[in-house]
Length: 595
Image (tube, rainbow, N blue to C red; front, side, top):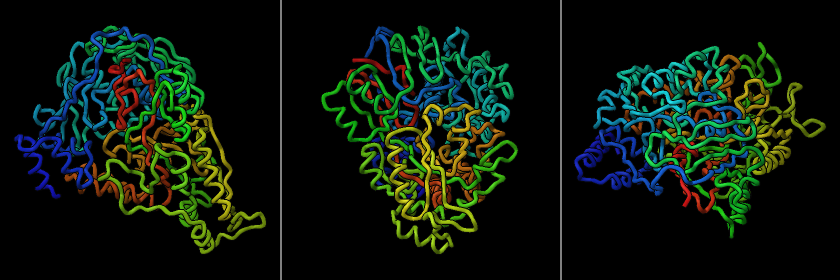
């Protein structure tokens, strides 16, 4: 299907000759999933669909306590410093973006009065500006009015290099202007095919100027609100013990009628994924548990006759391994894994290729994850139009041995291969979690058969995914040879997801290790393809460019994808959560209710 065919179909939807559902089905037949189909319609002047609300309560409050269990406990409450998903989720209880993504990939207004479209004048014909109209009469939790000044300030805060925000990639290449107290305009340097990034979803939470204005730039870490948030969300902050428990109370001035349903909220941290699943599904002590990284057989046993159930929705999340091509054991200017260094052995492409062949992905899927993931060789897997058909995986100890033999890596007396006095001995790090430890063990066993020695390191999840810049064991530091974790795709388009592969996002001491490129690897070709995709309006050509970025890193065997992850949570049978695989778990927390 070319651009002309696409225009005919979208025109048919605009004129009423074709239903939105028929359009989406036609595109699904060629691999374009619903989220992208909805964005194409929006770009061509068809407003985003607004799903009918299934919310049943007729008044706010009265639902009693809502108890959430996050076995990776949050450690801070500033969404723009939240490199760990747990901190993003905790921040989202109090802060809101202009819009978020539902399960079908529709852009749903939150602090915005409506989703921008060409039909309502929000999207310019040249693709260079987006105008957001804000809701009126929205108040911050301290009673101050929410205005366009807060939106403009959030942009200024996040793009300032001295702030060292985790979200800076969404804001550094735009300009934001205040039109009036309830209207802002986002300006791009060139036509923008995917414009719903800044102020949207996980990266889009708006912070109040009157609380953060004195703490922009170099003073950003000193703001009291980093731990005591004042937001616009459905719950007001009560108390926070980092690494333990977070509590809030219903916001009586919330801007959505009859919401929220619950009177109080508790986010309890700690424990592990299995105990969290048990506390919801079997004992009913909690209403909801996040990120059920639990062996599927264990979950199935819990579900039989329990008080809760497993929720599983498609997502773009990926469980993967990074092979460090910098030297994690040499310090340069107060920084290990510096881009000024090269790894003594993993900088050899043959070694990386061999390690990739020593991963038994099919067994990891079959015997550990089940519903939780599908084996893959591609970093991007959803939507399907962005998944590489070229990338394939294979498990072969014989081929790995042959590659290492030909590359000159000889087995020593201890069975470990070496060359020029350097041994293939690595520290392999991940978070403490049963499926991950079992995955590590499977990979270690195969590597031993190829003369590679792995020392397995497991870090407490609340530390590993912490945004604490002083801790050497966080995943963004990468102070080891290789590490494994899941990274979340926060929107139904992989552009921001793939900025983990661009040179200007490399995590360094200078940006407080909040750059999204944790691997430190860079490619001029990948940078150029990414920049070209940012201004390519033809959907097929843009997808090809983003696929190229993905393939460069995967074919270099710096990024080793393992499983395309289903987003899995646990919920009480009485709880009706609004769950999406394209945003945070609590993206629409105000609409949760108990039946």
